[in-house]
Length: 112
Image (cartoon, rainbow, N blue to C red; front, side):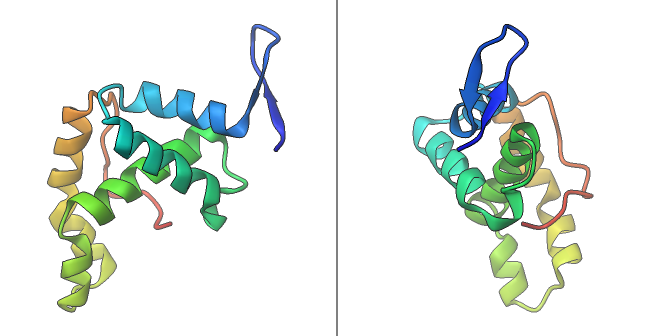
Protein backbone atom coordinates (compact mmCIF):
# COMPACT_ATOMS: atom_id res chain seq x y z
CA UNK A 1 0.00 0.00 0.00
CA UNK A 2 1.14 3.51 -0.71
CA UNK A 3 2.26 5.60 2.22
CA UNK A 4 0.96 9.05 3.00
CA UNK A 5 3.25 11.79 4.28
CA UNK A 6 2.21 13.48 7.51
CA UNK A 7 3.07 16.99 8.62
CA UNK A 8 5.42 15.70 11.32
CA UNK A 9 7.45 13.85 8.70
CA UNK A 10 6.10 10.43 9.70
CA UNK A 11 4.57 8.07 7.21
CA UNK A 12 1.29 6.30 7.60
CA UNK A 13 -0.17 3.51 5.49
CA UNK A 14 -3.64 3.84 3.97
CA UNK A 15 -5.35 1.75 6.68
CA UNK A 16 -3.86 3.87 9.45
CA UNK A 17 -4.81 7.08 7.64
CA UNK A 18 -8.41 5.91 7.19
CA UNK A 19 -8.61 4.74 10.81
CA UNK A 20 -7.34 8.12 11.97
CA UNK A 21 -9.94 9.93 9.86
CA UNK A 22 -12.75 7.70 11.21
CA UNK A 23 -11.66 8.41 14.79
CA UNK A 24 -11.97 12.13 14.08
CA UNK A 25 -15.26 11.79 12.20
CA UNK A 26 -16.91 9.41 14.70
CA UNK A 27 -15.04 9.34 18.00
CA UNK A 28 -17.76 7.32 19.78
CA UNK A 29 -18.27 4.63 17.11
CA UNK A 30 -18.20 1.08 18.49
CA UNK A 31 -15.15 -1.06 17.78
CA UNK A 32 -17.13 -3.51 15.63
CA UNK A 33 -18.63 -0.73 13.51
CA UNK A 34 -15.24 1.00 13.34
CA UNK A 35 -13.68 -2.15 11.86
CA UNK A 36 -16.53 -2.58 9.35
CA UNK A 37 -16.30 1.03 8.17
CA UNK A 38 -12.51 0.79 7.87
CA UNK A 39 -12.64 -2.47 5.93
CA UNK A 40 -15.28 -1.08 3.57
CA UNK A 41 -13.22 2.05 2.93
CA UNK A 42 -10.24 -0.13 2.01
CA UNK A 43 -11.96 -2.65 -0.27
CA UNK A 44 -14.57 -0.50 -2.01
CA UNK A 45 -13.58 -0.10 -5.65
CA UNK A 46 -15.12 3.38 -5.70
CA UNK A 47 -12.97 4.57 -2.80
CA UNK A 48 -9.55 3.28 -3.89
CA UNK A 49 -8.48 6.62 -5.35
CA UNK A 50 -10.22 8.81 -2.76
CA UNK A 51 -8.22 10.58 -0.09
CA UNK A 52 -8.26 8.75 3.25
CA UNK A 53 -10.51 11.45 4.69
CA UNK A 54 -13.02 11.21 1.83
CA UNK A 55 -12.92 7.40 1.89
CA UNK A 56 -13.56 7.39 5.65
CA UNK A 57 -16.50 9.80 5.38
CA UNK A 58 -18.16 8.08 2.42
CA UNK A 59 -17.68 4.65 4.00
CA UNK A 60 -19.08 5.87 7.31
CA UNK A 61 -22.19 7.30 5.67
CA UNK A 62 -22.67 4.21 3.49
CA UNK A 63 -22.34 1.92 6.52
CA UNK A 64 -24.98 3.84 8.45
CA UNK A 65 -27.30 4.09 5.44
CA UNK A 66 -27.18 0.41 4.53
CA UNK A 67 -26.77 -1.22 7.96
CA UNK A 68 -28.57 1.06 10.40
CA UNK A 69 -31.54 2.47 8.46
CA UNK A 70 -34.36 1.14 6.30
CA UNK A 71 -32.71 2.45 3.12
CA UNK A 72 -32.44 -0.95 1.42
CA UNK A 73 -36.00 -1.85 2.45
CA UNK A 74 -37.22 1.38 0.85
CA UNK A 75 -35.36 0.48 -2.35
CA UNK A 76 -36.90 -3.00 -2.27
CA UNK A 77 -40.32 -1.38 -1.84
CA UNK A 78 -39.81 0.54 -5.09
CA UNK A 79 -38.50 3.89 -3.93
CA UNK A 80 -35.82 5.43 -6.11
CA UNK A 81 -32.43 6.01 -4.43
CA UNK A 82 -32.92 9.77 -4.11
CA UNK A 83 -36.28 9.37 -2.34
CA UNK A 84 -34.99 6.58 -0.11
CA UNK A 85 -32.02 8.76 0.89
CA UNK A 86 -34.39 11.60 1.74
CA UNK A 87 -36.41 9.37 4.06
CA UNK A 88 -33.37 8.09 6.00
CA UNK A 89 -31.45 11.39 6.18
CA UNK A 90 -32.55 12.21 9.73
CA UNK A 91 -31.69 8.69 10.93
CA UNK A 92 -28.21 8.93 9.42
CA UNK A 93 -27.59 12.28 11.07
CA UNK A 94 -28.89 10.97 14.41
CA UNK A 95 -26.35 8.13 14.31
CA UNK A 96 -23.59 10.56 13.36
CA UNK A 97 -24.60 12.70 16.33
CA UNK A 98 -24.61 9.67 18.66
CA UNK A 99 -21.13 8.78 17.43
CA UNK A 100 -19.88 12.31 18.18
CA UNK A 101 -19.38 13.30 14.57
CA UNK A 102 -18.84 16.99 13.86
CA UNK A 103 -20.28 16.48 10.34
CA UNK A 104 -23.77 15.80 9.06
CA UNK A 105 -25.12 14.49 5.77
CA UNK A 106 -26.80 17.08 3.62
CA UNK A 107 -28.15 14.66 1.02
CA UNK A 108 -25.53 15.29 -1.66
CA UNK A 109 -23.10 12.46 -0.81
CA UNK A 110 -22.39 10.16 -3.76
CA UNK A 111 -23.52 6.54 -3.68
CA UNK A 112 -20.74 4.00 -3.22
